[in-house]
Length: 218
Image (cartoon, helix red, strand yellow):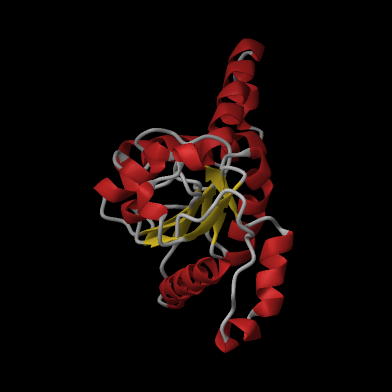
């Protein structure tokens, strides 16, 4: 399991795994086999790491695919029952993809900045979302014209600031059924809040993460 730094990352495949070869090849082309440095790899990740090469963790992509299938089944089950998923990914590489995916599936998302208390202090956050929606409606209807230019400028800035954190959750009137997080090491607060509110978490996690901290680690 630990492997040798000089060992090849090539994985011996069973007949069943060979049937998945086209998908595994896609995953390899995308670089999904690479984790973090050996020095920061979480010991709990040993079941998902095939070996180490040049000091970098190499994931067993057959296990990754297995976890992906379980997470997909779980999320599809939630959506089939009408449940909503909150997708979180604020990193530059994830930001646009999270928004596109969430909008295509009719789900909620946070892709700019996680506001502390978004889950644990939902009632207060929701009241601010309602103000955001009210201000947007007033602007669209031309009702901001009754204010002075300075007041209008301040209200415009308030709308812009609200948009950064609330655009993807403005219709989230209740807590989601599950939270999908792109790298919980980056979004520790989101993971902590979801855990505190007993919301199941699906997360794309690298080798430095704790797979036990979420219901469905990928």
